[in-house]
Length: 317
Length: 296
Image 1: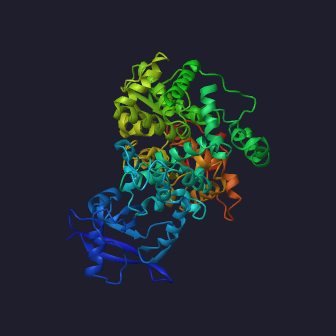
Image 2: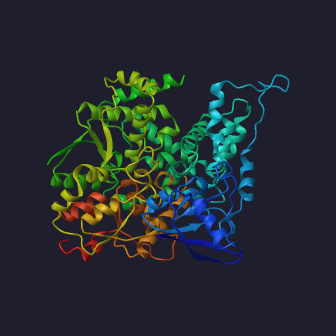
Image 3: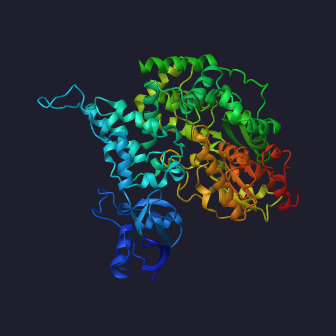
């Protein structure tokens, strides 16, 4: 009979090591079935968490061959087909501390989540007597973000968190902030938004990992774009991230294309650019990659492009 | 065989990555691929403009695609991951949502254009596999890259999000390996094959992105690669032009040459490194290539 070789990263509180198991292949099973088989039939000391088996409790997410999956709603056959192998390596989620084997620590993440005040700050529009009624449209604003089951898959795959766990917020925390910012019953969106801005909002790398791996298909990157727009509407435009985005926005309006030479100056200002980017600029000039004397010409059709900008403004208002 | 595409170069091909413009055109000419550059294309927004105005981001890319539709071709081709993602995102949004498409077209009418949805947006890597064919590519190889160990660095935006990109499984893509092997090169396995280069946040997250750059260079170096090959000029710029800055944070030597996919193809087609403008890279790639490829 065909066998699956499973290597699991074990951790006993002091040391970590990989342990190998062999499981007879069965068609049509889930990843959670595979883990359960190992624990029940081969090794009762193996630790992992799971409960609902229906992608509701969010407790069984693990790393397999380098990617995060929710074990209960992931087809074993699909995973074997993805990696074209019968060898699977299981590890705990990345960007979390580990308690034992595949079990991770959630408490620090929940403490971190408190920064964005993950609760409704009631608006004056509602009251205990009359309730806090929502229209169907208002409800739909919060429908997708409330699908989050806190499985941690997005955090495990986040490339910014991988190098900045202290400063950056997990995508599920950004989702939680978004959920209250867009809630029509919340009267103080800036109280959720300000901590998001202060915790490295502009450091999202646009890598698309979170949105690509979320088992609930929550549009996390659209939410991050919304959060950034909202901070700018709040007046927070004097930071590197906003200035960088406006450099692109304005260059397209003025010339149609990006002026790469001016981009650092528009983002960081002249002084900061002079202090930090001179070695970079010199090596770029040396290789002909930057020509400080070359100014991009306006593209043909620039007047038409500006009409699109005018139209977008009309649509907004 | 002549394949004809509308060509969207993207901003970086006009300045920092001009070598990608040069090598793409050389390779296309040898392969018999006709590239008609869009007249009056704009920047795709580079994954930034939607942070200010999502509708505007869709509108400017609808215009870019509409310019391609006017040429009567079936595909618009790019050589940049992020341009591909931005154009495909705009297209998918409009094709899925008739109301949005109509709203965008009200604006486009003022420019004398209309977005119809008749043109597909593709990337050179995909077009080589889907339209040109690996067997045809193999027939054009003059200098098999035998012995050259390449590390394929995909970059995020040619893979994700999968509902927008979807050419291959984003968790285990094989297109780069298929092309590199067709050219005779040997692909090395390394941890950072599907890593993020960090380019889009190199200003606000400079410290973090330099760490990532160092890891992204060290990983293939330790796996024995002669060079990184990437289908994205933004990954190339991040890994190459910022490599001296990233080195400062590492004790080990991270030196790793970074070349563009069309440059790798061009070498196998018998085009010289100078003609492919490989001498424009910050980290000199030519010595590593010379050691391994005899005709170079």
